[in-house]
Image (cartoon, rainbow, N blue to C red; front, side, top):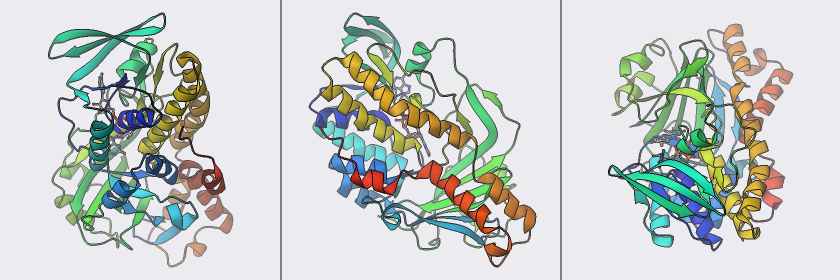
Length: 407
Ligand SMILES: Cc1cc2nc3c(=O)[nH]c(=O)nc-3n(C[C@H](O)[C@H](O)[C@H](O)COP(=O)(O)OP(=O)(O)OC[C@H]3O[C@@H](n4cnc5c(N)ncnc54)[C@H](O)[C@@H]3O)c2cc1C
């Protein structure tokens, strides 16, 4: 049983099916709707979805990302990093609408696995010998069901994680608020670049196009340091934000590639979210229960890793379950394979590794610059490149040459 019909849960269902295993997905929402705004799927995740037969679907939905470019608050270029196939990977990176991706995964699950059980909320579990006794709630009724394995793919506020770790592990907020939205706008740069302007030690504005069908659709994310770091009680991806709250931080920007005021004004629904994570866990699950995606390793959404790592978890979990006779041993192998790299990523994201260099640019050249070579030393630029690669790039050759995880 998979708890959660998000990117991670649905990818798990497809991966288990492809590995010849049966599963059911329970999802608390009554109806799955295309919520959220843009996300990036890195080549290693695109590889896994392609091996699940979804390559053409991704190409129809998303924009094949060409570059990630960093600029100062005036739009002057600091650094360009090639992405996906431009960087030598055999698979592209895609910038895509999260909700549309979720709907595409849902359609594939419904076709290959069966209907997702929506309106069913996970509440509790008990391990009982070789089974897990799961308590669910549907329309006010309590359901108790026995399953072989329970996978908590229920996101950043995971109830499965809370049951596994009842002493609590708080949501840690770094004091940065993120506002997000999607609107129609003129093409930015080549129409396929993730453009990052400014630094979130003060204020940062990120844009990328996300739709192959509508090339004018532009995703934006504004990140502003508004408070000292602390602990927060909740992080709700659907919380609505206000134009005035975000606009005041960018009103003075003369940001050449994008008219920020017009873009914010053209956005139907502005969303706000605190930049939160949780400390990496010493173990994810126990016995026949485990965690996956944001439930296992919530991290700051700044490195194109939220959806991508969930897809990798899904494929690796299915492989482990299909290749080990005992499910408990399979879950141990899954955690041994996926927990160390994702824990490292959580901490790497938390250190906001490139922000200090970008802040240095605005300190040294507050009014802008003509050439970045006049502002940063080659060593500083190389260090910034390496820091960004640590967040968003696995080794190109290692990925290209790794045997498939298909069973
Ligand atoms: C509504 C929504 C909007 C988002 N928008 C963005 C965005 O704009 N940008 C971005 O970078 N990331 C966004 N994310 C997060 C992003 O999808 C994840 O970081 C990433 O895809 C990993 O996905 P996941 O499947 O682990 O978790 P999620 O995508 O969060 O999915 C978790 C699923 O579990 C369900 N669930 C939660 N509790 C229970 C329960 N007790 N019982 C049953 N089901 C439960 C939720 O309804 C949800 O469908 C959003 C997530 C959600 C849920």
